[in-house]
Image (cartoon, rainbow, N blue to C red; front, side, top):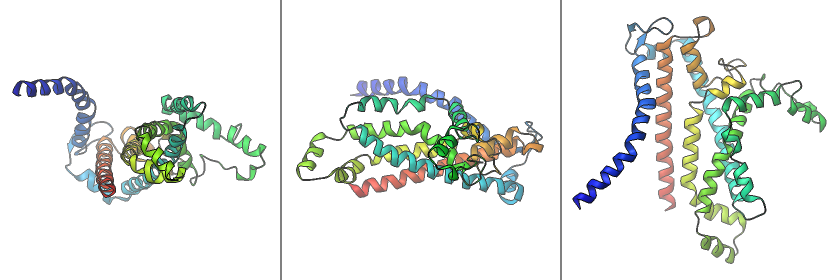
Length: 306
């Protein structure tokens, strides 16, 4: 028994240690370093003065800092909600459709994942080309079908810019949601579905009383992955608007705020490396609290269903 346990722990060490080492080197150490840097101040990238918690006090008490921080936080919440609704709701129903047996269903399952393989910068550039006023494809299509009155400066209007960026992200990672939900649906015992059909269950009965409860753990996984991705997102903002979150900071989220405050000059909105590290630390805290909250919520839901 003792020998078996030693072999078991040796097996775990061999396979877990490399992943843990990579995670520590590229994730844990940078996070800890960022927390340490947030306790210092200096000009530009230089950190030569220990200030303790002064950067955090400034972030939440001085208007020039907290106005941008809370604006980015609010935009991030909206961004997350839009992406979550699109990827969870549409992704789930698309997965239900693609797990039905029909000609081309397997091909559609594969092709739905194709956008995920693209670079975020490429996706942002494509959407920017499609939505530009001239000769943008989207506006041309609206004019062609008689809906020209609905044309907007999509990325130039503060009311629509963030929604458009969220749609672009949702489109790119839509295939991930479909893949997760399809794998969960494939794992449901066919005999349960067949028994429900014999009892007269409609497709909607199957979805809401069999499929949805069965894939609830998948909902939690997809939601948490979206939450982490959206609250650390930067590339799509950089590609589609700017590091200032144009127009008028309406698309400014934590990722762009961190980049701008850390690496830009004071004239371009930079706050210095110390304040940038403070923003990064707050990002980490928000993500950690959010993930813990979602895990607790979905665990309670799972227990209630059982």
